[in-house]
Image (cartoon, rainbow, N blue to C red; front, top):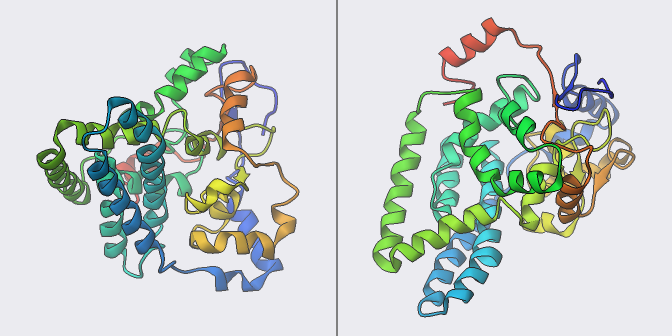
Length: 332
């Protein structure tokens, strides 16, 4: 990785993403890693509890003053819906049930209290994030050139970028790696619309706003939202992925164990801490975090950190990209 770079450009790397090599080295050193792979049967129960709590909160808030709604929208709805985005992440790897179709159904169920359909679309792009991590024109987890050039030089611009994080994740794929709508996405839209109609008929427009704004809050200036920056923004030259070992992992399906996850995407969230304990020499000596809030603060206040602080590579040919797009991506 080239450490010195123009002020308005990404970290460009001519090498392949590091996790395939790390996983091979880890398997050679610890052959019992494979025993950690497989589903977590508790995932479906955690999701059911979270969805139930979100609907219950709407019921209990009826008649409450507006400031209570605002407080609960940020603290409760924002936290639950932030957790549900990470449940969708877990299920995109088929780690909640043995059959892929059940994982897709669970992901749509987890998506319901968010008020905005996202599960099926997220799955399509997230699979390519793993397969083509950092690849120009394919990995939509990386900010666009527009984001980097507009929100790079002062703290308040970066704060605006964090505020609009939900918009970037919604709009970026359409411009960087567009795809035709899949059948799974249509099913996702219909299920969300039916659930939203139920919420509207029982709790009115305020109920819909509570869910949707909770989703937005959980992706902005929220402790859980720190993972968006913490996972892959380059804080130390040459390191592409960072883990977080703090208490919020308890709520977020251990998404903070992000090096562990990228090294072995088929190890469920419950076993990622076990992987770290099994192979500490691969994780403990590289930079990691203990606070997502501090990550957000450092990103905004450190002039060296911008939306361009991501590693990119250009190893996939245009012909391969066109072929991939012609068949609708890795998954539909």
